[in-house]
Image (cartoon, rainbow, N blue to C red; front, top):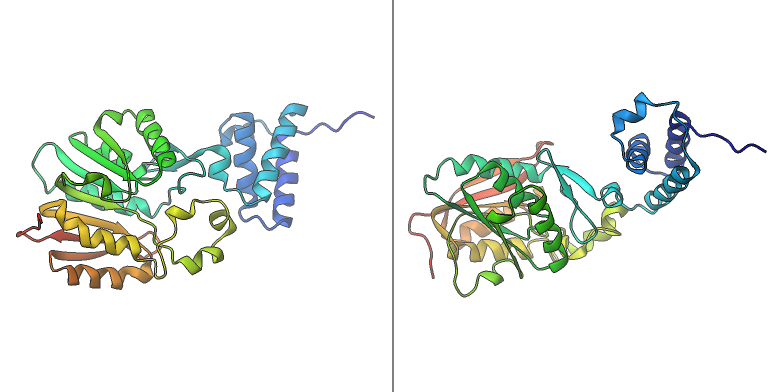
Length: 297
């Protein structure tokens, strides 16, 4: 019997139906992204070549990718890439998948850089993960020197690779350690401190989408009982590393914003606290300026 010949159009339709029946959201998008990845072409090329037949090797590879997705492995980990700030970043299970909400933090940070006239501009990125914040800032602000920390050496390998791929490795220093720990005892001073720290409540992790709860690194998600462990620590310690008039920008859950503002107020060293909404009009970023007296203790 002559084996069935699968063309791109028929395969996409079949894969989409199969993914839908298995409860995978955005089934058509998933089917297209995985097939484009298997064939090493852009998605638009699939539409331009609907009648193209696939080889048995290509079919076998595609089936394997579909099976991985059915286990709720994120598309980004399967393909190894995620777009952020219109740049392609390498990702793997050692780092969180960059979210569009974090672009809000980058956008606000870029606006603040215009208020400083010193060169170079010193920026600290805490919990850098895949390095999207550091790399995006370095690409947009050529006069910036950035220091990025992360507790995971595996994450730093990814971040360094992304910095290298985008030609900014010479302006970003990566250090291993928890938040400010690698900066002790020197305590360098920065114009901006940026962070998208772990902020998911411990008890909520299991209730997240399986793509997150089963595959993304817990260490980058778990913010403790109320999700505020890292946020409070950063707010408490940041004044030691900010120049007077410098800014702290933090991404968080909308449900943590008021607690974060309270912690900033209790610290007694900040002014101009501001809440920023994300693309869904939910409060996502909190920023505050170190007052003119500063805190270098």
